[in-house]
Image (tube, rainbow, N blue to C red; front, side, top):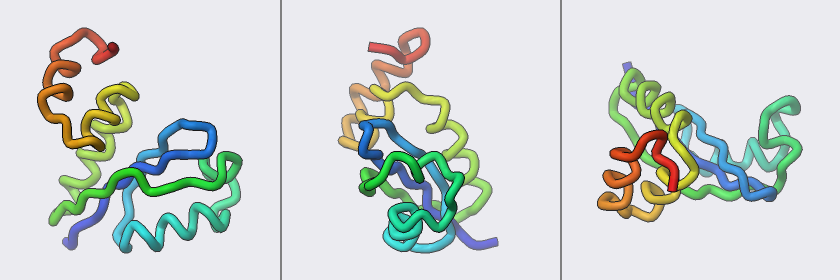
Length: 99
């Protein structure tokens, strides 16, 4: 099996979309912004920008990471995107990870 990227897009309404792709994240970003998938969450929240991307050498690990991140609070996602690992740990210790 090959690896995959997890990525987070920031939508025009300020919400985040977390996804997974085997292609380069910039190519997936183009697909979102050009409404290739008309029923996608992002299709009504354009334009979107790439806020975070991380490569996993195993598709299984990438799927696991994507599912975990999708369940996170906005604050935890922002801490991860900013590389603020101390804050991420703090938020993980709180019930629900909310600020």
